[in-house]
Amino acid sequence: MPRGKRIVIEKVIKDPVISRLKAMKIADLKNKRGMAEKELHESISEIVNRAKELYAQDKLEKEKLRNLGLLTVEEAYEELRKGGVNLSFRAFGGRVERRSIHSEKIGNKRLIPKPVIQDWIALANEYYTVKQAYNELKKYEKINLRAFIGRIEKNSVPSLKIGTARWVPKSAIEAMIHVCKNYYDVGEAVQYMVAKGVKIKRNAFERRLDRNRIPHEKIGGRRVIAKEVIEELISKELALAKPKV
Image (tube, rainbow, N blue to C red; front, side, top):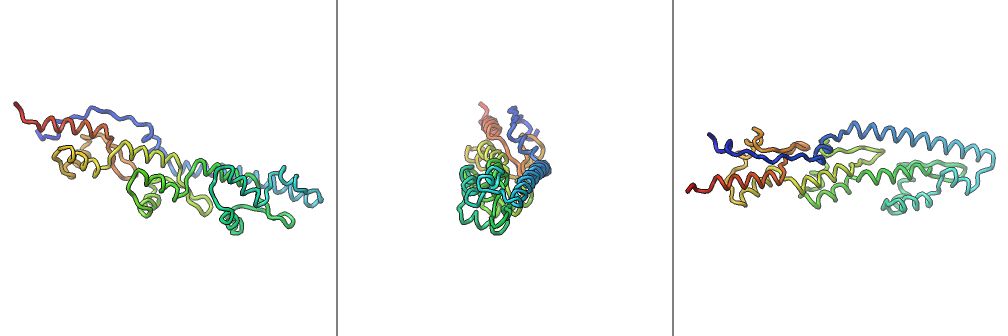
């Protein structure tokens, strides 16, 4: 009997984090965002139409603007900062000028509907920008920005394009960090086993994965093996390698 068949891995890994990551679908993210944007547009239209009505009647005062939910550029920026979004005023003003931030001209004033800022804060709480996502992941995985962007382009890292920016769910990055902490990829697993004294080549290890003799998960096209599984495998490999007395 081939030696590999003499080892049976008993450890069963049921990882809810992996299950949630694999269940995350881009279509679901798009649908959820579509509903949020519909509500956002309805709120903006209601606020702007009411403001224009009051302006036409010469009843639009500064305090009424705030009560309606219309902010000056400075007020909108302060709301954004209070909500935890780290952005310079110059960068914010540039986005307003380029119309990447929705604003309305009422009379001679450029105003930003408050729901626009609230939506941005909500997005920042739920999503990372691509650069933020990369900076978080690289703390735990050796990966360069180009490779990370490649994963996004191949949809192995879920993301969502909103306006001109691409956003990555924080929950996806948190799950990927969990994988980095608790799993080995194939190369890491083989390297670790060899360091512990197990004589095994990568192609032999991959054959066992192909035959499902070693429990593993496939995430974004990569196979990963729980560290607990590798520890059990090492223990059993070393026990088999001991000379019989």
